Image (tube, rainbow, N blue to C red; front, side):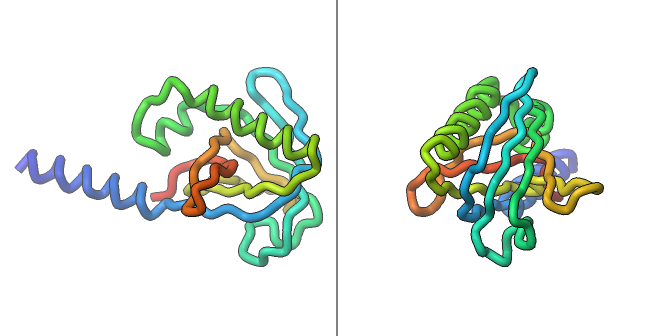
Length: 147
């Protein structure tokens, strides 16, 4: 009986993780301002994709407060390299801003939380470069897992 419950729980976790999925959209990075304790404020200029969470915004502000525990809940495993992955993704965004080139920016699960006070402002608990089907790595935001 206990084995059946454990197996059912494991299959549910895997199914929920697979459903969380992710999507990215083309954006330009206007600026990246890093703060203390792995915080950052990233300003994006979105493309014309009507499916993007910021489709009605001319500019998008993302306030990032790195949270290792938020990622643990999302991935169901402890990963000591999360901070370096977050920093690597921030470097990619900084480079894109400096070179004025477009990037793809996405979210996994509920990767961005919309601000209650500003419709074009979002919150994130961390970034990571993830490989998409085109073989390229793009920046993804994490906030909370989907269930």
